[in-house]
Length: 402
Ligand code: CTP
Image 1 (cartoon, helix red, strand yellow):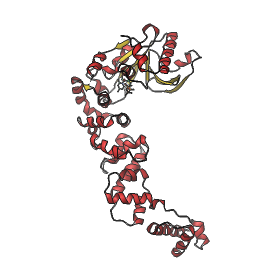
Image 2: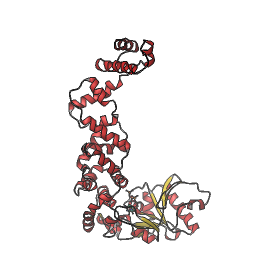
Image 3: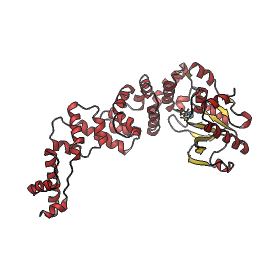
Image 4: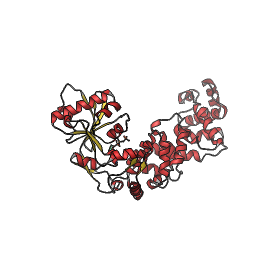
C-alpha cells in the first residue's frame, strides 16, 4: 500500500517538503530511511502530526553535515540512544538509528545495539506503532505494516507484538491505557492479560520514567478519563502504595485549574496534595520530583496542622516561611475556617512590611546588637495585629518597644 495521498492530505506542505528533502539527501548518501511509529499511525488515522520520526540504517550523528549545504539544518540534541533532533524548514525531526533493544531486566532502560530496520520495528510496543513508510525514492511512501497493524487500526484495538512486551518495558502499561483513552481503542484480550501480569513490574520503574509517563497522561486531551482507567487495574498503587487513585486526582486537578501556578507542575502539586502527610516524603522520592517538591510537601504538612483559632500574629508566624503555592493548593481542600485564615494571610498579613530598619532605630538611640532585631520584630507584630502603618507611625510604635 502506498500512502502518498494520505500523507499529502494529513501533513502540512512544509512537513511534506522537509520529508522530501530528507529522502533526497538519504538517497544521495545511500542510506535507507523510513517514517516510523506514531508518525505513520497518525497519518493512517488521518490526523495531523506534530512529531516527524525517522529511522535510518546509519548513525544520525553528524549525518546532516553530509547534506547538500544549500539546506540549512540545525542539530538540536543528541541522545544516549543514538537519536538526534534536527530542524529543517522549521520542522522538528527526530532521526534515530535503526536499533535492537536488549532489556537487562524489567524496568531498566534497554541496552541498545545497531540493527536492521526490520529489527527496529520488531522491538516496538504495539502493532499500531510498528508501521513504517519509506522516504527514499525507490520506496517512497510504501507502507510497511510489521504485524497487521492496519487490521488493528480498523478494528480499533491495541495489541502487543509479543507476550514479553510489558516485561521488557512496564512503562508500556501506562502507554497502552493512554493510547486506549486517546484513540477510543480497546485493549486486545491477550494484550490485556499480559498487561495484568506485568502490573507488579511497575514497582521496578525508576522515578524519572514513572514521572515521565504520568506527565504524558496529564498532557492528553482527555487525561481525566485516562487517569480513571488506571484505577481499573490499580496502576498507581503498583507504582507506590501511597499514590492517589485517578478519580481523586482528576477532581483535585480540576480544583487547581483556576490557581495562578506554573502549569507544568500544577498536576504534580495536585498529585502530592492527595498523599497523606506521613507518606509524602517517600512518594516525592519515589517520583524523583526533587527539592522544590520536598519543600512543597512539608509546607502542606505544616498547613494541615494549623489550628482554626489563632491570632493574626500567630498565623503570620506559622505561614511566613511557607511557599505561596502550598498555601494556594491547600486552600482548595482545607476547612472553610482555615481557608479564610490562609486568605487573610495572603491578602493582608503577608503584605504588611516594615518601612523602618536598624539604622532608623540606631538613630533613635538603640545600641547596635540583638536589641535592634527585637524592636523591629515587635513593631511588625504590632502592625500584624492592628494593621499597616506609615513610616513615621512605625517609628512612634518602635519607640514604645525600646
Ligand atoms: N516505543 C516503544 N516502546 C516504548 C516507547 C516507544 O516501542 N516504551 C516506540 C513506539 O513504536 C512509538 C515510538 O517508539 O511509536 C515513539 O515513541 P513515542 O514518541 O513515545 O510515541 P508516539 O507513538 O510518537 O506517540 P505519541 O503520539 O504519544 O507521541
